[in-house]
Amino acid sequence: MAIKITHDANAATASVELTITQPLDDFDLTEVAAPIPRDVDPILASQGFKDLLDEARAILEREFMGSNLEIAQLTGAICKEGAVYHPGIWLVVCEANAATEEMSPAARSRIATAAEFVRSTLQLS
Image (cartoon, rainbow, N blue to C red; front, side, top):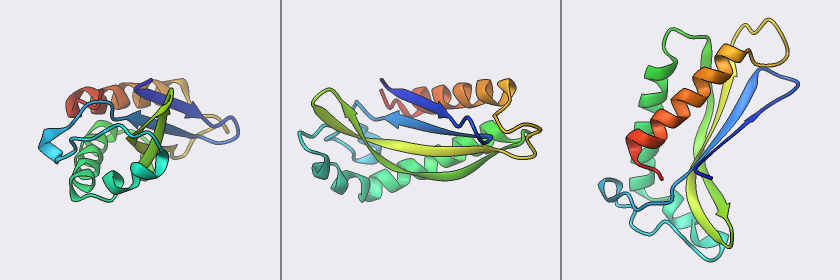
């Protein structure tokens, strides 16, 4: 699964995991599959991955502009797909001034749209 979105039932937050399943030559990320999780760590620490996070942040900030959605955390992740591990982007989004404990349907939809836009723009899978 290239995108996994999990909504918190007790807070107006959501986590998004974007798995990188294809090499990203523009970011010098040519090896994106590993047999064991610790083999993904050097990828997450590379300058290319840091540049990818910067690009993802810029895209998300544009996508969330004018909404009450805020990036609470954006970092690397080790994603499992079957018996293979991949690098990924892990994001936590908060809905500021939410009237309820759960995230609103409009915010959920906007997060899903933004995640898909990041995935397709950066060609993560």
